[in-house]
Image (cartoon, rainbow, N blue to C red):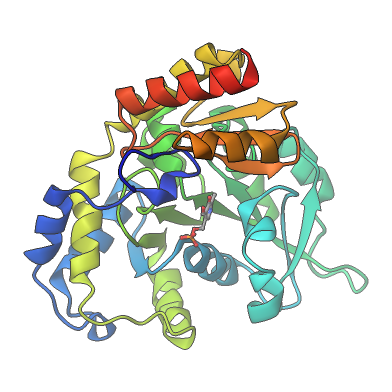
Length: 337
Ligand SMILES: Cc1ncc(COP(=O)(O)O)c(C=O)c1O
């Protein structure tokens, strides 16, 4: 972060720490397109095990993880059902349609909150000559546009139990599943076992410069490997990147609790209901977002404008307690709170 700036725009702005850089520099590497990079293989094996699946695939981005993940459970001409604010349909440039010929259909949710019955009611059966069949449901946890909302375990379980009988797959966009795990105490494996394919990111709260992993069955991941190559995501000596991810699992996972505490502090200082802040995101509603963002920037605090009247603050490992206090002072003064 530029000297003196408190950057709360996103948890993607983190930069690798000296320890992480050392781990990257020292990584053992090989050609990963030949599946010969030992560090990538170690990361894939560890991530698959963490989520209770057979296999995993290192991919350059969460977008690629989600899109390949959905393709593995949905054929062209079928549909994936999800909520209208899901990252997979909001921020991934229509990739499901543009790249894979997959239709998406959405339901409007309460700030991204998963309502299993609402989704189940919309599922269209296979084998009907008139209907686009629903092959999969995509769930996001935590929910980005739901401002870090943690999905209720009971709803995830309900959806999963239903999906087994219905022959509908579940894809989990777990870009921030780490935050959900730390906030709820639900084991990663429990979340993993409630989905057929799971995409997780290391480049958000875990603080790596790049890297996501897609997990699933051995058969699906073998097919995913082909898709990754087709999309130009076959990478060579990327053990240097996988090493950052392994380092993040060892050093940056448990500390997410600190980011969540920082978000609570910001909420309290800025008059936001702390119970609406479940992980590392705080939303300021009813503000003149462009004016506030500009004025805050002039005082060294960067925030995201998510609408003309809404600002989002995201806590992460590059903002310590002093930075949080400074941001709170600046924003409290600007907003008169
Ligand atoms: C919920 C969620 N899923 C997926 C992604 C995509 O990750 P990437 O930017 O690595 O493609 C993001 C990115 O912020 C995200 O917030």
